[in-house]
Amino acid sequence: MSIKIFNTLFVTFLISILTFSHSYADEWSFLSTWETIKELKENIEQLNKVNSELINDLTELNTDYKLKTFLRTDLSKQEFSDIKDVVWEYNENNSVIESELLLNAKKQNSVISERKKLLEEKRKFYSWLIPYINTKYKAEFLEYIRRDATIFKKQNIVSTDIIVKKEILDTKVTKIESEILKHKEYIKDSIKNIIESRLDLKIKNLNTNKSFNDLNVDSKIKVIDKTISKVKIKLQKLENTRWISWTWDLINSNDLSVLENKIQTYNIAVNKLEWFKQTILK
Image (cartoon, rainbow, N blue to C red; front, side, top):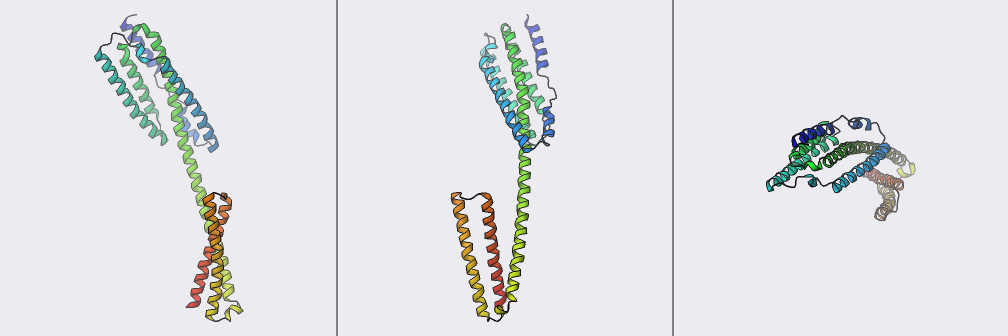
């Protein structure tokens, strides 16, 4: 077979195997938004397994078929230099396009354009190599290209979908965490309001108590200071318990939450009593 015929057939072959086709993976970013967190995690795990298999296939391909073995044996130093330059340019172009693809995938934008560009770069690279290929190895070389293109297409789809699903998963988790935080803050504020209302009622009852009202100002202050002192002792014990628990990790989250609520209650009590004492001193 002449070089010209080989080149023509080779270009036709390249176009056929490196033609971009719209994949269902481009719709996954939309469908993934309806998946639960559990489903997303399971799908990502499965996709990672597939991606690892494809990476192994690519490694095996490059181990079994060294691209340089298909080159002509009579290449000049200049031709070798030209090939190195083209390989460098191909890798650089791929790096730029892959960065764009990664960015768009994370933003859950369409990556069809970038995928087309990557396939086009590969097609141009192999097309450029045609004059340097030994026609004796045309069958092996075409098989190498076919395998490479097949793996490349699959890996491109899988790796992109992993990025998209991870981003959707992160978004869902962040949203849930935000909702949980808001809920906790709401509960915290509600508990604080309830505690303050109850303490206000107790102070009001004390203030209207006949025995308390019969006391002079100094005696009233002593009663309040004694109460404040008792509350502060309890508060200090609770804070010591919290410090020990944090240091040695001796308490679960639920018990810690109860402890925090108790500390909050005693802090509010101290502030209310201090305020009540000031009203008496005026």
